[in-house]
Length: 377
Ligand code: SF4
Image 1 (spheres, rainbow, N blue to C red):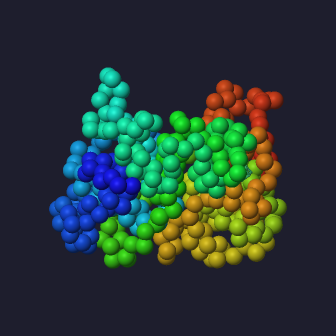
Image 2 (cartoon, rainbow, N blue to C red):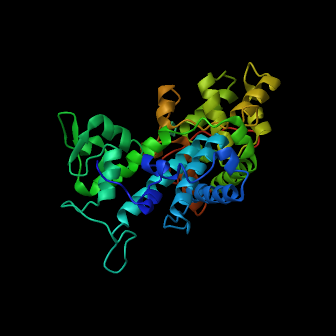
Image 3 (cartoon, rainbow, N blue to C red):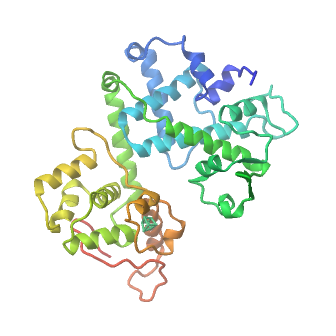
């Protein structure tokens, strides 16, 4: 498409190739930049960006009162920093944040009568799409003038959207094309941006560069862990999803778990706040229990080992593939991740006025089993 976005437009959509080209000559090589005052300032902006991505309440409006090239640089640096942190959930969060941010700027371009948009020079076509919107959509292979898209693209884009309207059964599918409503196009563009930005993470960052950024990556790791603990609160075993209950039951009954089962259980209980010794204790009843080996494996999975990589609990789709999705209940119907199940059920349990009350309606009644280091209800 023959259109050259302005610097302001590029700063709002910094993932565009033209945005990266725009700043190529503005800064020295990264290892050099990081030694300068300017580098420290840009790292600060990048961290702000990551913190925004991690915040439960996002404020996407242009909170960076900075130059356009600095804003683009902070986008690139944020992606480099999370690549050094090596946490898949951080990649997910940052990709989602950037996509939501782009969506915000697409919608806020021309503004309403009472509120002026950020782009007073926007020129709209017959479909009320601006030139930058069309340019962006073309880059991400979405045609804003069409009312359909290829089935494979659609399925990939909507995989994390749970609203019924996005389900294929509620769509017109013809000749490999899925029907789209005009007002959904920008939402789908947002999701396409998210998918692609996530797909490109992590970057292969040289170890020496990650070492330079180590103080920042460490503080982000700590902040994130703190946030996760706050988010999940005290461990509540009765809110565990059926798949995790089943794994614990199997362990308690003295069954050896498969590698996939161990991985799923360890990453799950680690994320909800169980410490390494308590996780290792979980495995003490396993017939082939080897304390040293278990500690090594647990430390490896939870990121305390040499690699520093903290693994994420598998989503429901992956659990199904490995045959670990068992005893599904009503909550599972609207869940795509065991951690979402846990968060939801924990909230529901907390709402109950009298926890000892009998015959409470509960869509899920997992068997209670004793787990070392966690509280039974
Ligand atoms: S649907 Fe998800 S949360 Fe429910 S049992 Fe299966 S894997 Fe676990």
